Image 1 (cartoon, rainbow, N blue to C red):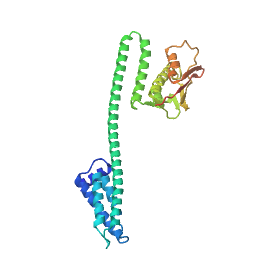
Image 2: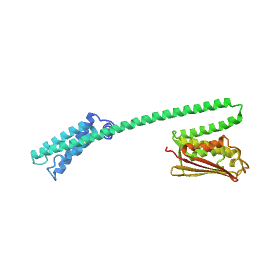
Image 3: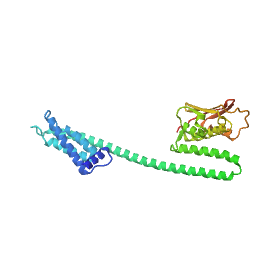
Image 4: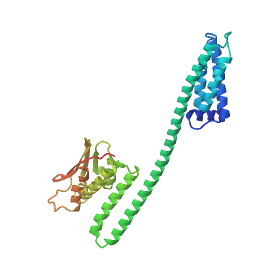
Length: 320
């Protein structure tokens, strides 16, 4: 019994076609119930011959398919003509109603069969999309793994070449590690990007979570913009650790951001750091800060105030 119910349920949902025996048993049950309903209606209106069989035809077609629906319609029409619950005999009017009954059943069966085909096609499409999504994730994971291996290889080669130049290697090493950390952060979200707060906490966390304050609503950054901002944040944090707020015991950092008309406005504000007496010629880090956001119609402005470094950034947030 449970197997029969499961077959009929799968047929109704369009998952699979029930066996011919199960469909026949279901259709016969629907016809029997419709005949009982017709008998009850005949106690009030004895001239109702075919209407009670419409639900039987619809359910039989929905569960068992078009062929079972057609057979049910034929059987229902025959019962309407041959079975009487009154003294009335089959006349030309009843046969005219039979033709109308079969015509309406034909449209209903066609509609149900068309709907079943659409559902089956959508189910197949969904199954195919799920398989393709699984394959895509596998490829993305493989590419991320290869990228990580290449980054590690580049890191090792550069270390081998520059081991006699510790200052140059130190500068490159920090930036490679910052990029690698950002790539890992983006990879955890399937390569689509990352949240700006997660990125800042990752970069500023080593300096102590009580040393900085983040003000701004949740903001998801597309991958390309996230990588560029990661480099900017790394340069600013490195400078803060060497010469700015993080180099003194009382230094504090506040990072604020807002979004207006798809443009990101961000402020990096250091306080209680050492007084900056003089600023040397711009080095690679300064040039990086000034050019990193140009690809996003952005700009970076840095001011060396008595209270500490004040940096403002503006850029367009690309569609993710």
